[in-house]
Amino acid sequence: APFSGPPWDRYSQTKLANLVFTYALHDRLAAAGSKVKVAVAHPGVAATNLQVTTVQGSGAMSGFLSSLVVSQSAEDGACGIVRCCCDTAVQSGEFYGPSGTGMYGPAVLLPYEAEAELAPAESREMLWEQSEATTGVKFDVSK
Image (cartoon, rainbow, N blue to C red; front, top):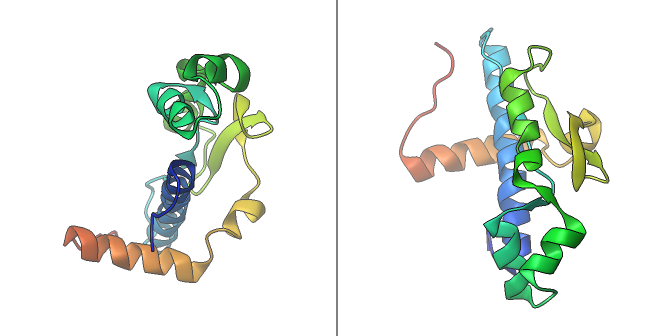
């Protein structure tokens, strides 16, 4: 079933859905000749309440210890999103995330090829259609 399983699995599924939807939106905007840019970012592991409560719930370690051991600050985790919003060099369809093994560090452009394999055209189309059906809204970007 969609979005089932342990908390980290569900979290990963939602992050993948964000990536797939962003690529689908980029495809549609590009096909329409739009000047609108769409980009996506992930924070890596950041010391937020999400991190603390999920780790505590799994019993792996205390939330405090996990924040010290495996994460960056919440502010540093926001850098990819801020870069996508403010950096004029960001291009539509790009994906940014931490450089340090994908968990921490400066937000950098991630290789498109590796991520695009996770978001093939049929997945983009399926997620777009399901999003429209679930919300009851037709997302027309051709205008």
